Structures are given as C-alpha cells and as structure tokens.
Amino acid sequence: MYLEVNHAVKKIGPDEVLKDITFSLERGTVCSLMGGNGAGKSMLMKAICGLIFLTEGTVSVDGKIIGKDISFPPDLGAMIEHPGLIPQDTGWQNLRELASIRKRIGDPEIEEAMKRTGIYEAADKRFRKYSMGMKQRLGIAAAIMEKPSLLILDEPCNALDEEGRNMVFQIIREEKERGALVILAGHEAEDLEDVSDIMLIMKNGQIVERRDLSVQNEP
Image (tube, rainbow, N blue to C red; front, top):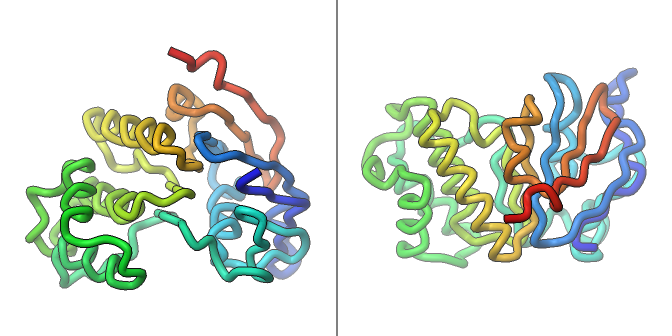
C-alpha cells in the first residue's frame, strides 16, 4: 500500500483529537474524509503531511514512516485549511516562489496549473486582492502544479460556485487518472461522493464508517 495509517493517536493536553485510526490506500484512488467541525479531518491530514507528530501510531508513505524515516512525504501537494500565501505578491509570484523550493518545475507547469484552475487571468494580481474563491483556486493550483503522487485537499470546494466546483471535480478525476492518491475533506457526503472511491466518515477523532464507492461511480 502507498499510504498506511496504523493506530494513529494524537493528544493535545487532555484531549484525544485522533483516536486509534487505521486505514491504507493505494495510488490511483480518491478518498474523502467526511465529518463536521472537530471531527479530526484536518488533524489527520496534517499527520499524513508530517505537519504534526502523532502521540502514538505511525503514518507511512511508500514504505517510509513519517517522522522517523522521512520528515514529510517527498512527493506531496497539499492545501490544508486556508491557502497560506504571501499577500503582497501576485498569484504568479507566489507559485514561482513555491516552485523554487524543490526546483522540479518551471513557468510552463505553473501556467498549466493556473489555467486548469481558472486563475490564469489573475496571475498578475496581488494575492491580497483576490476574492475567497480566487484564493481557493490559487491554493489548488499550488497543490497540483508539481503533479504529486499524493494530493491532499482540505475542503477544495470551499468558496467556489457551481462552475468552480465542477472544475475541482474535473481536476480530481484527472489526478486520479494520472495515478495520484487524492485525499479530500468535506462536511457533507454528497459534496464529494461522485468523485470518491472510498469515503471515511469521521466523528470525534474516529473513523466511524467506511464506504466503498468505487463500484457505484464506475462509468
């Protein structure tokens, strides 16, 4: 399995925000984490990304344990909570600065990602002047531009209209077809049901139900 979460526990003070979570996923799969605020979705995503340390248990990606063998997944694209980009820089400058960290892509790939997310026309506009929907589109562009093997999107449809939601669903399908493991989070099951192979329902830091949707979503 490409991603394995084994008995993951996270405690913050007296509170157990992740409670003995275990599941595994292969590449070429779309998995949605569903649940209300406080369900543990974002915390679980942060653990997978290596942004927090687990109290107990492990997360491994491609056979390597996060926090032991590697600090974070080496081939990761992620947008968790709100896009944390530089307000005074343009959309284009923000993506170029992110791309300069790993030096895997150049301007053509950045342009492609901005066009896929419908934000290219605002490439030269400062991020602080973006609407909420535009910021969401740029955050998704940042996550997909390096064509990662593991793509994590926290509430990707947030602040988007119907056209924007359809754009997100198309990108998710394309990334799955490319062979990425895509992990999403949302509040309502029906929001992401049509593009998901697996849905994990979370409540109070636990997975309370697993739904296999791959058969019903076959074309």
